[in-house]
Image (cartoon, rainbow, N blue to C red):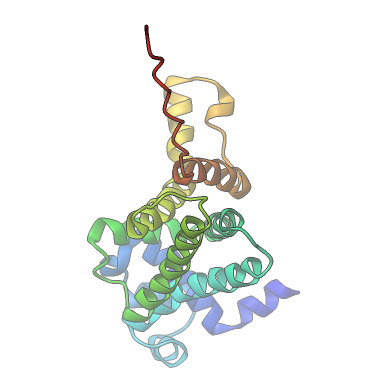
Length: 221
């Protein structure tokens, strides 16, 4: 029943098709005529429901980002420590990337092009997520749990790693098929697997190291 309602909504169809086309062809390679035809609407209807190509691209990206931000806000409300809050960020972004198979290819294309096509409103959403991560890092440092790290580099490490780990499933399968190896090392990973793996990795790296006490030199007679 829900599927029928989705198929009958022109805007939903347009955004679904546009996400697939932008993911496979990039912003520059995507054609409005192709998107309209595949969404079973004419160009006038596409412009009416969404807007021009830039507005369509923004709507595709915002649809996923806003959904992820809402889930992050809800989950963070129940998290207490900086470690718990960072795990929430990682697990929510990993789930969002896996649930939407077009998101990782879109982001990888933007990373390769220097983000030239990302609309300003999308950049503002990305900046909001960065501020959240930066606040968590600062809280963890004040609590004596995290060492001092560059928040920009850490944020990009988190987001980039999640995207690559999510998008890398076909490459892992290809490596397994060509060179072999333990199947457990190459099977597709769930969002929970990816989140647990990377959360442990990043938190280990952030952990503040307590210096070992200096050894007392014994005086020789």
